[in-house]
Amino acid sequence: MPAGDPYRQACPTRRVLDRIGDRWTVLVIGALAEGTLRFSEVARRVEGVSPKVLTQTLRALERDGLVTRTVHPVVPPRVEYRLTAAGTSLREPLRALEEWAVEHLGGVLDAQRRYDDGR
Image 1: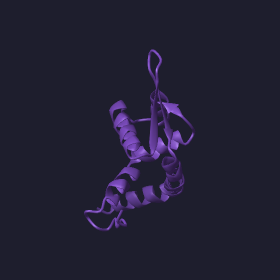
Image 2: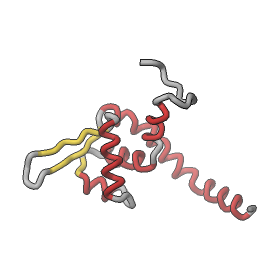
Image 3: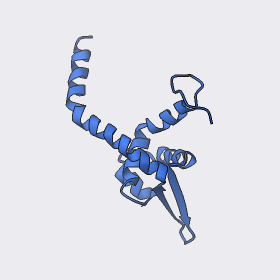
Image 4: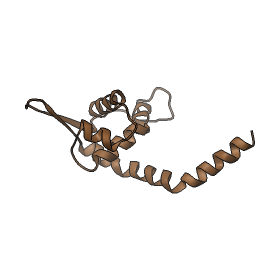
């Protein structure tokens, strides 16, 4: 497998960066860091995500090997999601992004107000 270079337009690492840089991915990975959850539990934890977008996000994370989906053969079927080892390893850098956003929220909002007022 060739070394990735995200600064090159055709490099597949850009698709990986798109996935892990997505707001819903950050929040779903964070929710699943708490442990195995059912769809409705993820939806409750990640307020504001539509069922369609949550389904798309979970499917993409499963395809990328970051989340495992387990269907239990009961009626009605019980479906659970959990992080894989790769998903768990992604949690720490994403947690750093979350913490940065919380820590710098006030400054960012102030900068946005100053920018908007100056236009």
